Picture 1 (tube, helix red, strand yellow):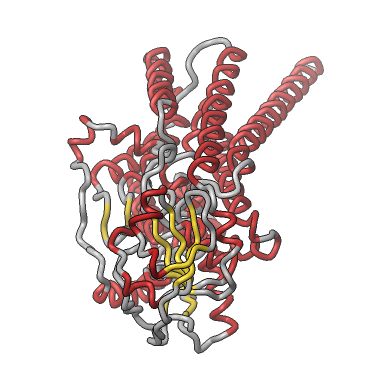
Picture 2 (cartoon, rainbow, N blue to C red; picture 1 turned 180 degrees about the vertical axis):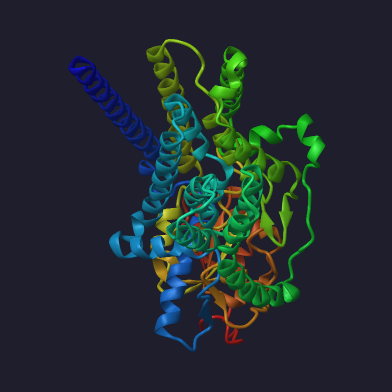
Length: 521
């Protein structure tokens, strides 16, 4: 009897030591992946994250609105898509403006890495799958700089763990946590709140929740729905007068996606070259190998809750439009999360643990190395002259940004699109375009901004006219020598900087006062 008790104690002790070792290994692996993923951000001054400067500028405008409550801007307290600005403001106070953008992106990377490894730990999933899933952080949403959406994934991991519980008589604390987390989903992004509510409904049905507790659980969404309803009333009024196309658009029809590169670009879609293609097919082969090797015991080896979440996001990504109400990448932004959940749901391939770990870390290190080198080439070749031009912009100037280059040789999509917003971040400049016009962030214009210059110059620089210049003090141009020589009205501009892709020009035309109560004078 005594020997049995001793053996049990030894068994419990061994189990405790094993669990402690696994937690330490998981924490160390997460730390390594985080450090590796932060390297590309640390070694570049302007990481390729398109909307990043506009989001930072939103905090600048919020501070300006607090200083001048009767000014052109209004803070949208209680609106969705604003949770991220709390952290941007915090970093605004902690860091210099020169490293603020990098600090924000590193914070996003930390949250995603932590969420992936935390989720893997809570669900007792393969560490190697968590390592590989973390590489999906470098997706087109990250490169697009959709910070409000990016902050929603860590919140959803908490929401996921709360909603999958099969508590038929939950404690009152569970309802409190559900309400609080639903508010965080709402604050992260309106799309995350909608997706979170749909997932909550689905998983409650899957768990066969008794009707009474089903309605009690769903009732925790009511406070967020009320808040969303009040916000949407104002937002719908703005949408009614907006000049952009609000109808849904499918760039690629659902079943056409099977015959295109949509799945690859939706998974990553960040850097040009073969690296993303190789990694995508490696992940497919890795997952297929896992399924084949464990085909006889999939029921015990696959996490079907994570698999259900992956399928949920797949349906959204596959069938939703690519754009609606000025929200781009509406469908594809969910696919990296679908892939992450899918990888975590699968067991690791059946091979020697050390070999498997070496393969996982080697693939991760190689992909991040290629990413870092690509970012360096991007900055070295395509951001020349930007720092010098920004430095020579006088404070509180009116700046027109013109991007004639548009596409990058190294980064997909439009990495230069919002680069001019750094002039607002660093020098408090007034821009030809601001996210305050969208009325979907922290700060909006108090009244609709009807500008007298050509619309959408941030998208179509080639549409610029001589008459547009009279409303600005300086023009920041991204162009090749031909653009600088022939595509801008040089006779009306004085050269301030004359080297590099990015150059600054002073407007010589007599300035015209634009006073609608919306633009600083």
